[in-house]
View 1: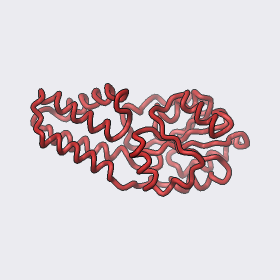
View 2 (view 1 turned 30 degrees about the vertical axis):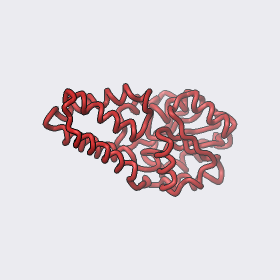
View 3 (view 1 turned 180 degrees about the vertical axis):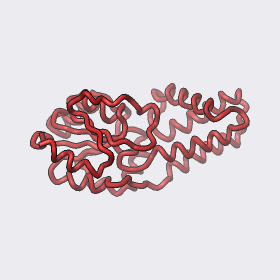
View 4 (view 1 turned 45 degrees about the vertical axis):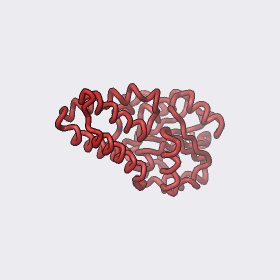
Length: 233
């Protein structure tokens, strides 16, 4: 199999660098700001519902998250939320957009160790400007043979990307922390899906692991990726 594999795609957020923990810090602050109006669990449920509703309008990323927080704040306070709270939520969003990038362990080594043999892609979703900013700050940009920032990661998305950048999905692998976005649709497209769990994963990205699939693998960290890829042959 190592001889037939030609292309390896990497997810970005919470696969190569930390991301979700900044959302958690902001969401905790959100709960503190609205503690006089509702309890934390109820607020989190309402926020998640708003995020689900708004994905089709705002897509994935910080801007949609902030707009969903503002919408939720208006709802749970019966439109009585102070302007100062709205201002704090907007400031929190700007802070998230300015936060420095911190690579996850083995991220650079995993890419560099495979780059001489395989075509390496970055396949990420979210706000274009924010993802471009994070990639530039990561220092990893020059290691990729192709970069794809997409609105959604579906079976069709992977089939198209791997056809354009490689021979086909059948000769490609996707590596990421989201079973729903990185792993399952890549396998459904005909490729390998390698799951590298992160301690914080947004609930909308969670799914049951497809352990019955021959082309599914789970690795504890990116540090094991090189040996796993080599073992396929």
